[in-house]
Length: 270
Length: 77
Image 1 (cartoon, each protein chain N blue to C red):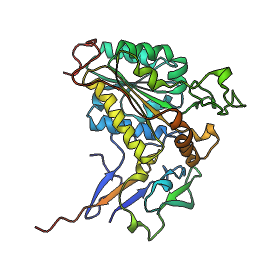
Image 2 (image 1 turned 90 degrees about the vertical axis):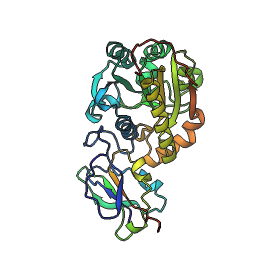
Image 3 (image 1 turned 120 degrees about the vertical axis):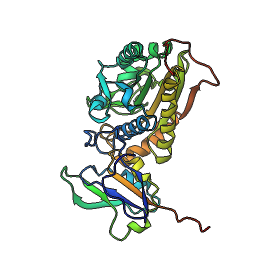
Image 4 (image 1 turned 90 degrees about the horizontal axis):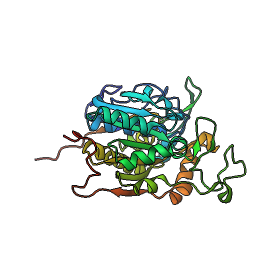
């Protein structure tokens, strides 16, 4: 049980505090940014599944670039979009380690599209956490492949036009079609109920790896109040009203029974 | 009695917690923290309404809230 900041009073239980795998420091994220929630869910699962001691993370470029400052596991900083390739190398060299990547939508769905597709198609025993906030956050709010139609960004100031830039990419649906994927789901971080459900999805994506079934993928719809030019409460409302109808939540692929995606990595799951 | 503890140095004043509290006791205070954010608080006297549901802590992106829940009284044998 993680240590509480204050002493218990008589007749009460500590029900919520910082997980051990999450560093005790302030994050650099903007107020209302959902990266903090995603980090906490990751750290809680690493604690609950007792994985923190044997985890290697491959972090990405974007606002989540400082993942290594917050999650108390060994982390390799990957070139932009190449985290699935780096994770593949780590997992093949050290199949006993738990390997996950944490990527944003500019990183995973744009520049890293080739890496994520082939990593999933090969059925690498890694887990990918994909945080989709429909913009390039760190570089100042440029249009990403997931930017919604009509959404204004610094590189499409008149709003994204379907004829000119195409439709937003639905990554969870694409990944679910690939043969190596063992678990694929999309959750959202806009409400307490959705956050709790998203954590269950993330747990199943972790288990796809720990049981040696195949590639695990979880997409998290999250907010970027700064680049959406909204306050945090309005940004959450935008996820509910605009993002979830276009990016439906739910499980897109889940292996049943004793199915696995081939036996690529020997020794995993034993 | 259930209660929450808001870490004022970690709070960024995003006020997401105020939107999810089922008993609506969280609100923005007039106090600024070191970063200049107006922090969330539970006004004095309202804390005994807290149910310990941990919704505020679940949606807090900055781990600024710690939740203590009162133990349920054991049934008489």
